[in-house]
Image (tube, rainbow, N blue to C red; front, side):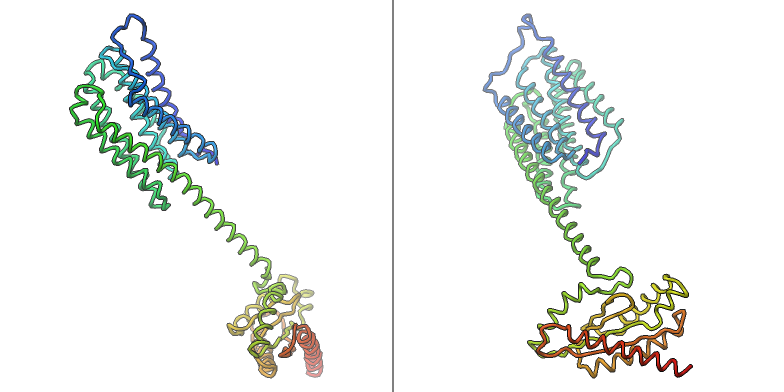
Length: 424
């Protein structure tokens, strides 16, 4: 599936690119004369957090290569920003201008990662936001985190960074929770809840005394790290749930298509009645009930008189309309336990749960009622000929009854023609 949220992808790339530029600027100014820079020890917890975030980024990238979904791409971009933010924050601990740039880059990447999570929820819900608005927000955030530590100091930087991160995480959490309105994904609930708690944790870090003194590690840091790991697990769960939901949807569509195809196979396209293929499916079950419980079973053949003259004089459109009229008439007259089939051409078959004498009476009623209806609705004087026969209680098939009913129908047709000739 192609990425539909193009503006979101562009904004994500812009965020990561700007963050990378800021990090590059931070590292470019490092030289031997800057003796105030103190690299963090390799065993720093922030380093370990950056490594864990990098592993999660790789896993999400593999998921995107497999699933090709835009929301996974935005998640991957968000974790990329988070990895870079933690790595930069762990690398520079200095009150110098270089340290200020590094701290600003770290905070910007943290906010950018949270905004990528917002874009991921929008991509899943197939919502788009204005490209210019996103690009403008990226530029404003980049300028703020580049300038604020140099002018107002680290306290303003970290307070604004935690506040903006909390706001973006809260928005991302709400957006993921709203996914539950359209799809019952437990993973979306886990991600949304974890992001909302992470937003509260960032507020806690903003208000803590450690922030006022600089980027010191605190209990809130480790708690927030645990929340990010829960978020990652929720993302994995949501991805597999989405795949399962897609498979269920595909199976439902396939089942619906199979049902529709079967209906087409067993239904006459012109009249909407069942055809001879469906008769072959039904008759085996009806014969089984007929033999086991002794339920009566008869067949009634019907043929349209003077149908050829309708096609010859009025055209095939009038013939088709006549066939539909006969089909509609028969459907109105049969019971729920009976079946009516278009046998072929202008012939129809009724499968009736009754004895032969009852089938004969019903055939006479249909013949007279149709003749009365045809005078008012059909373009010429047409009628129905019929023949009926009862299926033997020990019969293995209905072939003998069908043959007998067909012979009686043609005998009735000859009798009708003879009666009409005498009337003339």
